[in-house]
Amino acid sequence: MSDQNPLFIPGPTNIPERLRRAIDVPSMDHRSEKFAAILNPVIAGVKDVLKTRTGEVVIFPASGTGGWEAAVTNTLSPGDRVLSARYGMFSHRWIDLCQRQGLDVEIIEEEWGNGIPADRIEEALTADKAHAIKAVLVTHNETATGVRSDVAAVRKALDAAKHPALLFVDGVSSIASMDFRMDEWGVDLAVTGSQKGFMLPTGAAIVGISTKALKAMEKARCSRCYFDFRDMLSTNASGGFPYTPPLNILSAMKVSLEMLQEEGLPNVFARHHRIAEGIRTAIGAWGLKICANNPRLYSETVTAIYVPHGFDSNKVVSHAAEKYGVAFGVGLGEVAGKVFRIGHLGSMTDVMALSGIAAAEMVMADLDYPINLGAGVAAAQEYYRSTRHVGSVGTSRAA
Ligand SMILES: *Cc1c(COP(=O)(O)O)cnc(C)c1O
View 1 (cartoon, helix red, strand yellow):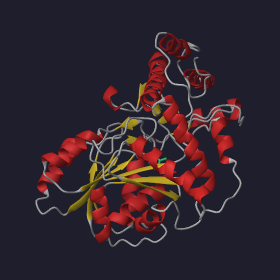
View 2 (cartoon, rainbow, N blue to C red; view 1 turned 135 degrees about the horizontal axis):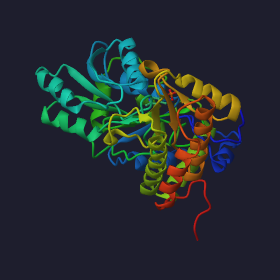
View 3 (cartoon, helix red, strand yellow; view 1 turned 90 degrees about the vertical axis):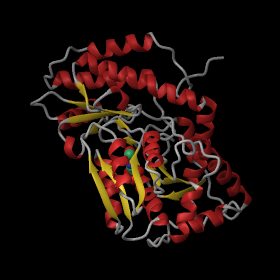
View 4 (cartoon, rainbow, N blue to C red; view 1 turned 90 degrees about the horizontal axis):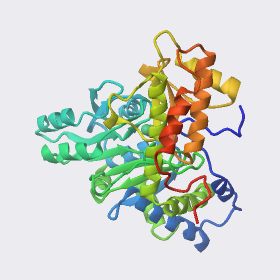
């Protein structure tokens, strides 16, 4: 596969040149002030991205899955009930992790292609008069189906039911690419990773913790050691780390946060929206169906596309890789073989997106799909021509 081509998988994402250089740092003493000068701005920058003023941020050497485990084990006890909905592979995996941690998971099954059903969450919370449910789990952006859930609606459901459960949100494929409002939405634990919106290699699990979650931490009895928030928070307070930190990732994260700040978060989100709209326009021109069931659910970071009946979506992915050196995402779980995914987050521009649309079109033409070569590209071109470019990632900035 050509490594000159951009990746169109929803993580790990393309690493811009500036961040590839920022990874290349010599080792340093992590008990020195020099390390604190990296860690402190990183933590402050992540708080800005999460939009939290009152919460804490911790960063573990792990992938996003480690962030799930840290959030759960630091705030809950074995046997605790948690409420979740399953509507894709990532919400499923988080449920599985909770079950393996000995939690009692109340699962609402939802059609894949829908988001979290806030109304059914409210019903379940209202029915729980004894407040046995300790946490509600939401996957903000279900990467398997390209569905964005309404976190604010889940907060409203908790408030309407006057229920004290913690609100956990997986924002691994949304945070830093789509708007996320930790304080405003009353999110108690926000989880993300370095290799998606932050445009970095895999290696950092990032967790936002509310003051309410910090109180729950004191009583939590799930076992944790490496992922213990308390060790991390107490050493971070003086600019240190409880063990050897992932220095290269943290150094580059400082630069990634600077890039996001320079572009401006509203511009970052607008860029993702515009790129995603162009891709969705192309899919419409192909006559294909998007997995997300309605436009309110459309993800700005990944789109899952149903292939026509009788076709195998895995072949789209393997043919794209073999013949054109382009990576798309396969369908996972219930939609395996039925959808392929275009990841369009992180370091991405309209021009890069056009190359992905063109490559997908060549692949489908090769595989005898009923599409007209050029139809999707032309539709996206018209969309991009008629809308204004914002932001600066991957482009030379206007004077
Ligand atoms: C990528 C992803 C994860 C975590 O995956 P890791 O491979 O452990 O980083 C979790 N949730 C969602 C929604 C994701 O997209």
